[in-house]
Length: 570
Image 1 (cartoon, rainbow, N blue to C red):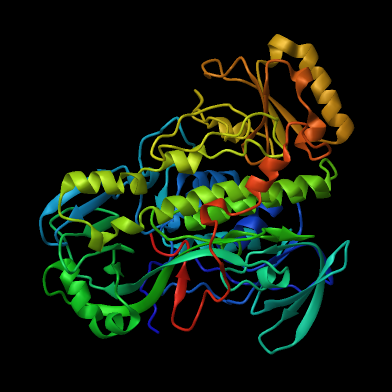
Image 2: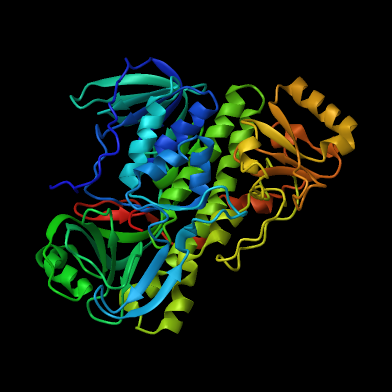
């Protein structure tokens, strides 16, 4: 298979160490979710071993291309946001537009400017704008980052093939490229091994959900002379004709990607060149570099954990690529479970805190899968060349800050008791709120720094500290008695919520809101006490895939030549 020509950003050399007989966390899989888990664990000072079959990151199939603002905020915490942007062939300043047109050389129908959180302006809502960058380049940056940490042992060429639960630890069987098996004992296992997850099978979990019956076909091709009179865009949607599809640049050296909804593998392989020229609307000199057939799937595991094993990313859920949320959701999973493991291992949280992983992340996953699935009726071939109908059908796909930033962990056993967050009725609108469970509203400070830059690695108390110094001092003492790392931060003078005391978790979500720090229940937010207002009915609601009720488990999700789609395309 030909490799896509790409800019050389840097070279990562894997320097494997001898495999330890034991580790705190074993991460099965070194894709985006596994690398994110390792990055967060290292950020929190926890050692881990990552087992990844691929010696090198393959660039022939770009998979995800949208890194959203929330994922970029996590990259900022790990101090790699700028590195990711330097690795990206398309700078944010190059284009922030999605264009709908009759063909790449035809008439413009509609533009969506500022799509996917792309902006060169400093916006108070978030600390980092989105970034269009092929997933392999993100993985390359993450590999370099975790390899620089003494806390991460990143091992390539092997695969996790079995788990044996020993109660206080898990024995993980690892098979190398020569077929030799070794055993690593880990206190926790994170299953980041994707759609065909061994860890999911080992804990007896199954996907539940449905698949879109229509096939899809991807092509990566080189066409150095290809230009368009429509101007710059990160995506071009060609609609209103039999040759509908979408395409865009992978770099500025002539490498492009294209997606053909409704095209199966046989037709795609035989007619790839003709399909490309239909999108372009003219003959074009090109070379097909890679092709890929896939099916959109809406799948959520019936459980996210068993004992000390946790499913993270695509091992727990698959969703269609529309909107570009799949890989970003996987990063959110990784951050959520990793900081909690760190808190338990550092002694300031109970092991019961880990039980909050599934109820917190399942609701986010359900919202994300439902959002992506809602676009299945408005693929390129389903749309007419009418600007108004396209605006109505596609707006929430390109403007989704309500989903990206507005999700909440309200109702979690590790968050201040209160009502569940209402459903997100308009995914395009983000309304900042300090309601417990939500992400802390962001603000830029006068010195040019982000409010998020000043949060601690552990818990942070943000509020009018000097106005209630006695209670703040008592909270600091209570935290110290429990070994809870607590950073105290005075609210900025112009912060809209400056009169509230907000207890912020390591993942920048609000654990508690009050005007009286004495009211903050530290045992509850660290898993030492269950909230009284946690009814059994809510536990039922948050431990089943409600958006997929009534569907049968799907076991075989990756047959020959048919790759399931999750974070794979847009």
